[in-house]
Figure 1 (cartoon, rainbow, N blue to C red):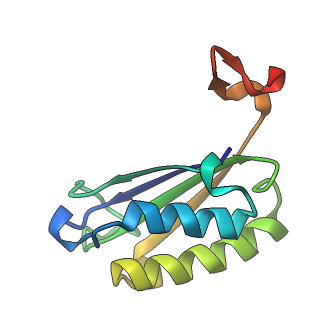
Figure 2 (figure 1 turned 180 degrees about the vertical axis):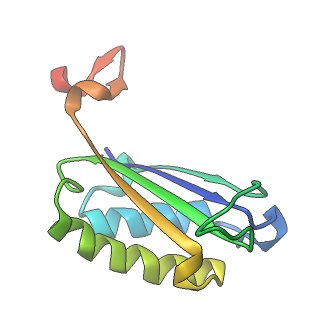
Length: 118
């Protein structure tokens, strides 16, 4: 059950319509997870500084169980997310930062319990 949060300083008018759905599909493909398990949030128009600069930028947080826990996994994921984000947001790679956060089943609540018991 991946959680993807995209924060960007781009104003809402510069964020392509439907980006959240395309990011959901891309995340499912990149992480080899079913699309109906992916959760996406897109926040635009934020005051942000990336690499010491307030120029337009984005930060992506990818949290998931079992697929973002090693440098080798994340190197491949990073390349594919960068390809997607640079194209969709029209930002250079140096204006985007990605954080990967591995999750455990007990850290995700669903249906009145946690994933450990589902």
